[in-house]
Amino acid sequence: MNRLRALRARAASDAGVVEFTAMLPIVLVTVVVLVWEAFLIGMSATYASHAANEGARIAAVGGDYAEVKEASVKRIHGAWADEDNIEVIYPTGQRCDRDVTPQPDADCGHVRVDIKPPLVFPGFLLPMEVSARTKVVYEGEG
Image 1 (cartoon, rainbow, N blue to C red):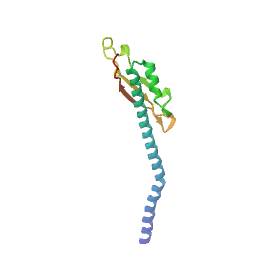
Image 2 (image 1 turned 180 degrees about the horizontal axis):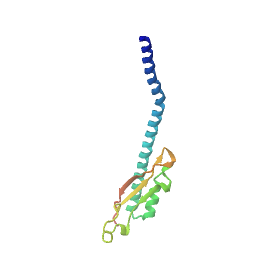
Image 3 (image 1 turned 120 degrees about the horizontal axis):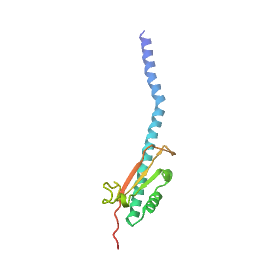
Image 4 (image 1 turned 120 degrees about the vertical axis):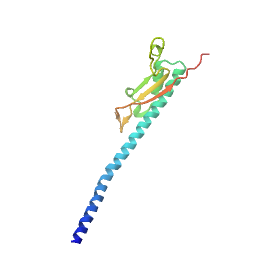
């Protein structure tokens, strides 16, 4: 009888080892995918920051919206470079005039770049945006 209990106890402990061995690859793949996605989101933030800085540099020397957007988009490479996934915001004119608009756009005097990060593979996008905003320090005349 004691021998039977010992065999049952051993079989129960072996079941835990089998379950652990079966689950280990699934856990490892999940961790690798999560780390990879965190890397992709971090790269999206880096590209958005570089693009906003470049756009602010062009705006500081008198560039219009088209020039700011072109310069910003040129700073983004790889899976992030699809222009449909990039939004450049540089409000000017009446949207920023405090005499005309009681509440001007919050991005006045800034260049903001929004990028949709890829989801694990290029072509699939996360349903969120990563943003970066840089203040435009206007160059003086003369």
